[in-house]
Image 1 (spheres, rainbow, N blue to C red):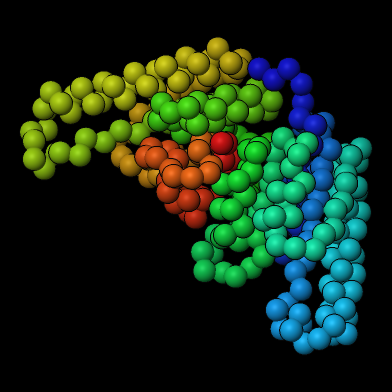
Image 2: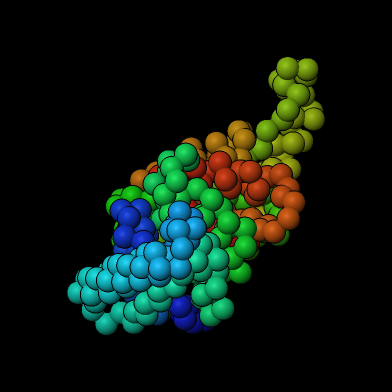
Length: 288
């Protein structure tokens, strides 16, 4: 269990609906954890403005800085009303979203970004930003989508595959379930790839399933030792992304592990995290 509450939660904000939902989710989480909420707003000078000359560039810079400052102060005032007593810091900086957010994480325990789920949208906080911070953030990253994500989760769901990253995700999920006093569901997928070449009742397939059941059982027991809430296991004969997506329902919070930098291995990390991130309708926590 957690010995203390987190010190700081960082959230990205640029006044879009998706970033607003991320801020509201982060504020709820910070209030429960008694953490400071750090709202980061940043802006980039358009390439056309930068190439038009120093006078136009300065004008564009000042206008964008003033607009971003106004938006940041407005969301801070709104949060002060909706979350009285919550400690709120606002940071406004110039630069790309991902690097601006990562620069603020030295003392952070959680980074929150919003996503609309539109993979081809060029909006500020979508697609590449979430992927970039998930790869490079030293702390867990929450990807939030939609107003249904707000408030106390009904259940925490975590995907495991027996790897070290999924073990870290399991411990984070157990702590979160304890924090909210809700149930924890541990999901492990397995799949025998030679069904078309083998008999349905083959010994190899049975052994594969038994190995998977052992991984799940060990994970469930580890979670029960970590937290004091109800922990259940779910063994799914499917690919890892489909397994966790099929397990979650409205009101859940999903937790997955990722290696972060460099080459990504199989299981519930790497491309699986990206696939789930694109399709998930509930908040997703990515733990490195």
